[in-house]
Length: 145
Length: 202
Length: 161
Image (cartoon, rainbow over all chains, first blue to last red; front, side, top):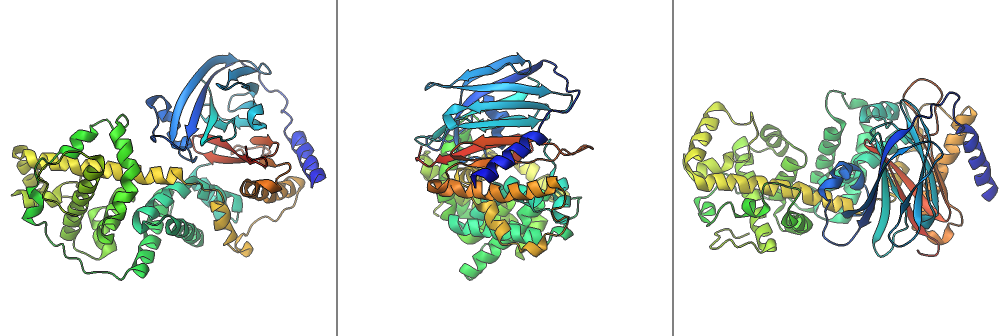
């Protein structure tokens, strides 16, 4: 089983190599740190209204924003978002082109690493800690401010 | 970046299971909400929802691009839910042709609306009421609950409701009023909102 | 028009009342505080209803739902390209393993190393690209694509954290 996984991962890396001529333009990015809970009064603060559609796909009903970073990102320079109970999440811009931006999110607290390509204006919502006591932390990333 | 519903429908029609899976994941919660509103029971609503998606798949070829896919799925879900409800409980005759005068003699109309306020996002009370909503819904008779859900979740018009339920338009309208009044009485009781002398007994 | 007659007209949408009903209702509402208040109540109930049901749906864990639906569709229903080139075969391979990744969220004891990959397809011309890759050690990761963007969730690890 494990060798199958390794082979698939290697194959995927080969497929995922950046195409030639990728632009490396700096990109304004807005990252927010959110906590989702199963318990407590269900609700979404007004500032998170733009995420309603995505957040409602999860089992968490109560949301709060705990932090925000707005940065102009350049490729391969990570932005670190501190988690309230220690640890941090690293967000790195891999590349940005006219129609798409690729981010790498590294979240050791959930032992997860992801690489996501989105069109400008779309938002990535990623869980960055495993659920504990009915709550979990998320980051949301939007390219283009 | 993400494909539209119509693109996914095209791909699913062409035999792409991943496109269909994506459609399911996108719409599963709203479908479940519609089903739950009609059949009340959570496990039954889960089954109804899955059945609805199966029917959607079977009838994908009939979906016309003019209407919204979401609306189409909801209609199918409501049909499946009502069928299930009819099997579980034999239908009773409707006894509401008109709204009796006594229903209107409660004091303080407008209490609920005032308590909830006009800005739907801000009030804690609205969130609390949403939390008890399914409990309140469960206490409504089937006919009231069904017509409320069809109207508010599926967005059916008076004409569509009359056709779907096989009742005259006038009955649709008075039944909706009656259903909302009952719902309001249940919600105000849950919320402990003072409505002195209310003549409504559910 | 008395209040009992106006009551069923409350909560109508534009175009649903004929001109006579419309005129009678407007006239009645202009003079009747009680019915205006009743109308507001009716609208309030409608909003709470939708909110409440969607909230219940948001609370529910939908793990396995889509799998359950697809499991009931016979394989023969899926016409179209059988896996041919290397890209197709990889996609087929990963699709099976995504089901495994979701299943391991239900059976954490069995997941030693969960690897979840999702291949998206760009809608423009040119070869398809990898849209999302997620590596998760010991946790099952799930990616949901919504029209606003992807949602990436992680499940429980085998040690129950």
